[in-house]
Length: 314
Length: 314
Image (tube, rainbow over all chains, first blue to last red; front, side):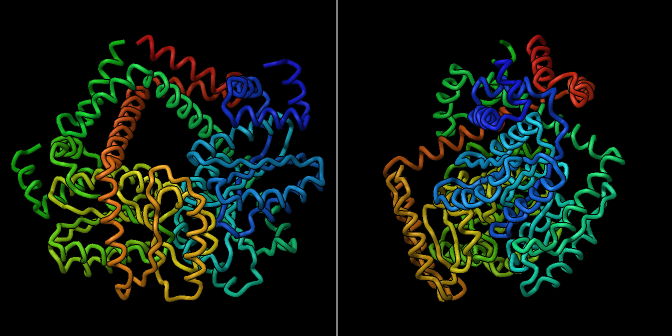
């Protein structure tokens, strides 16, 4: 990578940051080069993940949090991950509305990432974009995604503190996600808590939390908020501070980050093995065999053995 | 595998089928042996996937469909996949209630699969359980899962026909999933269509379908249903029949199944490469390096290169 480019990126230049993230997002060779060059300059930002069902008000909370951190004089980056396809355009429009809100402050960098492809790949790119922001000097990085299955787990894995946003009406869909959410949440926000059923929802969350195994000694708390009016944001910020301090003091933060590096190395190895294995010739060989598999002359397991044997001999 | 066991399985013996699925689910060596031995006896069943948001009535529709196919004298298997953790117990209870309903008929085999682990692995196990049912002589296999992100895509990949169930109230969560659902659905069911907003919901779905690229020449239709009263089930069955016929005549069914085999081989290869690569020694080596990575003396990319080089030299 261009030395001048790196210098500008590390200085926090906005256009350079945008270009770097685009390169990372498109997985270009220069994107890979950028990730490699910036790595020694990462690890300083604190990463906050935000997830929850659609319509829970995650974006509003992220904006309000960004504003609070700006008031403390911290540089803030926001990455909004949209695992649904850009097909309907709905989510993208939402982002655009919001951007005008945070764009007022030059200290907040906002980026939205959407993909028709796999949610898994998208989460990894979001984590890599966070690395770019980290190297570019952002001190707080907010990662936001709608909680639909895998994407929320991936965001939690990329974050130092994970905030789960629910609303009193979430009802059925919370029921379905509850178990997974309980396992990843460091803090719960019950947003729109001026609506009916808020107290019952808080009680329900607390009841389930009560049964949660306290593996890491941290007790997730529930904050009632009305984010559109700014209510509950101070309390949320305070809990995030407390969680950060707790993790720093217990060594849990370092542990989490070690695990994150381990996961990334495993992913990268998996990708490389896949690319090495599936060269054109082996792909061709497999496709020829599949015809015999569908006619039940061979099993997929035979094909796997044969291909692996040939790979090992090379 | 035991020859007697295989014989009993192929004859459709219920207890043997249950034991075979358990072995497959637990990934025991005998489970792997079973999959290999039964493979030549699979490929006869037609697989119908059913997905949609929680509370849409998927189970009711699956039960009613099973009943219709039983009336035609077909042997039916049902696999209900629950990608959420068994933590809350909610979904499991739902299954138990239902089982009494279908258990009345000995011709219907019902199995529910839940996991705290990754949704991806669970979907694969569901597809393998479907292979067991296929070998055991089931002619129709219904695969059901709650639509939360990845799990619906996996079920669609495992099915010959994919049915997406929605309700008038789904609102926000449909909005978020819509794009993905549009791409996988061969048929839509608007269940509980006696409720307010049903016609608007049908119109909304049709409007979006209108913009869908018709890659495979099949036009997904929308069926209005009140499954609890049996309304719409005949129409749904007729559309599934039509879709099956369409796919058989155009060669699309074979194409889909070829793709399924290709995907499975790629998955199996990926697993095996991972296991081969991450032996104890290499795992240890990686963990030692990670300490230097977190202190920014090395990048994850350096570690990856080093490990890969060593792997290739062996």
